[in-house]
Amino acid sequence: MLEHDVIIVGGGLAGSRAAVEIARTDPSLNIAVIAKTHPIRSHSVAAQGGIAATLNNVDPEDTWEAHAFDTVKGSDYLADQDAVEILAKEAPDVIIDLEHMGVLFSRLPDGRIAQRAFGGHTHRRTCYAADKTGHAILHELVNNLRRYGVHIYDEWYVMRLILEEGEAKGVVMYNILDGTIQVARAKAVMFATGGYGRAFNTTSNDFASTGDGLAMSALAGIPLQDMEFVQFHPTGLYPVGVLISEAVRGEGAYLINSEGDRFMKNYAPGKMELAPRDITSRAITLEIRAGRGINRDGTAGGPFVYLDLRHMGREKIMSRIPFCWEEAHRLVGVDAVVEPMPVRPTVHYSMGGIPTNTDGRVLASADSLVDGLFAAGEAACVSVHGANRLGSNSLLECVVYGKRTGAAIAQFVQNRKLPNVNESHYLQEAKNQVQELLDKSGDCRIGQLRQEFQDAMTLHCGVFRTEDVMQEGLNQLQICRERYQNIYLDDRGKLWNTEVIEALELRNIMIVGEMILTSALNRRESRGAHSREDYTTRDDQNFLKHTLAYYSQAGIDLAYRPVAITMFEPQERKY
Ligand SMILES: Cc1cc2nc3c(=O)[nH]c(=O)nc-3n(C[C@H](O)[C@H](O)[C@H](O)COP(=O)(O)OP(=O)(O)OC[C@H]3O[C@@H](n4cnc5c(N)ncnc54)[C@H](O)[C@@H]3O)c2cc1C
Image (tube, rainbow, N blue to C red; front, side, top):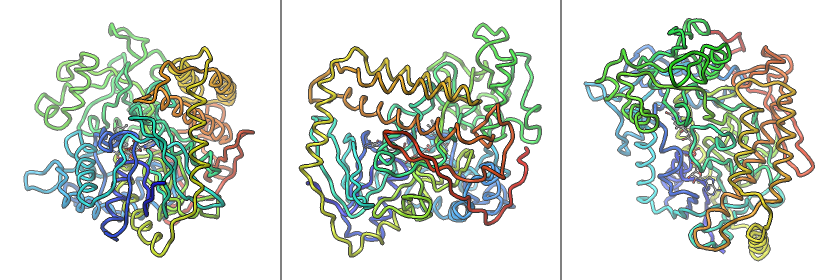
């Protein structure tokens, strides 16, 4: 059996930052990072627009309180304000620390870190490295993992969390290279497994964003919090769905309908294109529904709107957002210097996740903790984003809460013994699970079932929702679950069998999908990204609370827990 003091599942920004903090706090600890991709291929590497912090390099009057208020207002008052306070207050220090590690931020002429405007933020506080911010930060963090001697298991797929009697003891993992299965035990386990964008058919997320950490937690009996809040990013490139960063609008681009109108004036006159994402995604969806979308031949009534950069000029486009220009050019043949880009909302971010306290410790229920289990980053829900995340607050959350969770883990494992784990039991169980998949002889290909599931989620749990539509979504999911019994794998070998991984991932996103739909059905109000056409207003009286969804084979149970309101009383949210 493998043994480490600490096991971190996930090598993205949250997992890497936590590992660095543990190593800095106690260099004697034996730390492992396990990732199904290589760590520098984690989705964090694709983050474009930037990371928020009140450095005051561009707007001297900005304050952490203003950052906290924008975040809480953006969250439609569902964020826990104690967690937001920590996020905003600690932001400048974590950025300076990243700079000291060597992260190559874009600069002002005087050499200080440059900052740009971002949706829902009242000041220019988003630090960036052109439109490749995640790339710049993650590479430096992963370099540091090597420097601190962190043991990296790359391209190992974690299949199961070992949790017995309220205590996390380790994980079971599968080596994608050769199919070897190993049990690993540790004094503390952390999940930093990222989001679940692949539960939908159009997403900005990478192929690995399949909500594995969420599903493994749910299967172990841990509740998932606020799963109904799925962020649709307004500007996914049509038809592929990849992201065109909000930084493009931060730098001045317009959203235009088929009539050539900057339609955001009808939805958020005070903020225009820089309204928060939930509002902008709804605006685009309504324009398309009203027949003011655009077709590929330029006629009205089509499935997308235009993101127009032409007035910005070649030099600004190429220096501030070169990657977005390149994406549109490479993927849909649009030269954004002379033509507008076709865009529409795309699934982007998971506001909900594994509930934690502000030290990253995972909640077992509304008022109890799991022993030895931690989570941070997109997989976690601490909750700083509530019902809607502001752009450039997620990278920040990964770094602030990755660091805090790392510090808490380093303390937690002191004087703690390795837990007892029945290795052969878990090995046998995992081997049986894989063998069962290899032996399946149904008539349904994994790719086909995944597509059917993703289509069902997209159709039945989109930007706008109603009871009937979501109920039908749950029926469709039930059909998908039954069809899963009937899958088959073409590849029955051991070496690099990606089909085994796809089958395990599909089971996971289907669990996540059911949690999303069930939580969404039961929130009978509209708040942030959860927009119901049958309950069109926010209902603080009944729903100013977090959802906790508990999974079991028999069905999903829901409970609720209060929101921490420490600074700002809920108000009507207007932009
Ligand atoms: C295109 C794009 C652009 C973005 N731009 C911005 C931005 O400009 N600013 C901002 O604040 N946010 C942005 N975001 C959001 C932000 O990048 C993510 O929320 C954040 O990077 C998530 O980091 P993470 O560490 O939580 O997870 P990830 O970076 O997703 O890493 C997850 C890790 O878990 C591992 N893993 C998952 N499952 C398993 C398993 N079963 N076994 C082993 N390993 C596993 C993966 O291999 C990976 O290493 C963007 C997101 C996207 C998709």
